[in-house]
Length: 221
Image 1 (cartoon, rainbow, N blue to C red):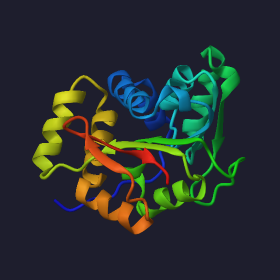
Image 2: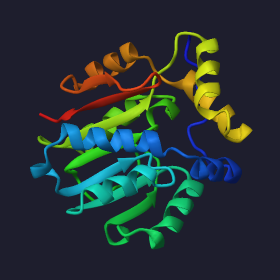
Image 3: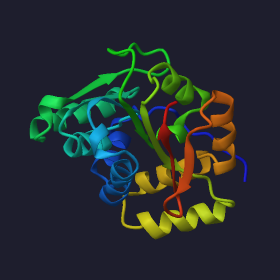
Image 4: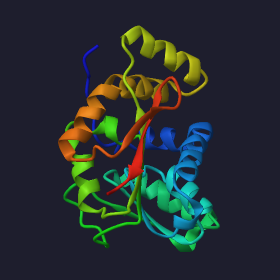
């Protein structure tokens, strides 16, 4: 099945709010657990960059687990950043979390390099995936921990429909529709491997962690 791109930004208010209200707790925890698993506790300090942070799900998870870290979330959607900022007062990590609106790779970030770069569900939104890898190369240095989580594209559209029904049958129609389109817009593991090779990020590893999620992780050399 060929890739079918979807809009890069979720700037529609209803769409953003449906996404923010959806229950992603299981997958968010799975990805945060993977970050803890792959990167030793002795190295969990410094500033962390969350690319395509959306309403802040992963940003807050990471800040909660790594109390020595400051976490910056960036997203191109003004609606998503509005929702993320609204969550800050309720979080016990509010002094260590910051959100900014910006579209990579042109957004100006406050630091040249970050101790860790994370991203969840950004890659499949990008019409040009090299944008993500270029940004990672720009804001990482030797020793930067990298963990990217995303969907991977199933072999057939029927498989995508099955996944949507299996995991999102109780969610609003708008969320089911977006999930389906995201699966069609996602990359295959082979395509991601080619992207990493082209970006000079061959040291990063690929691992399927569910029937729909893939991790790209490693430490910059």
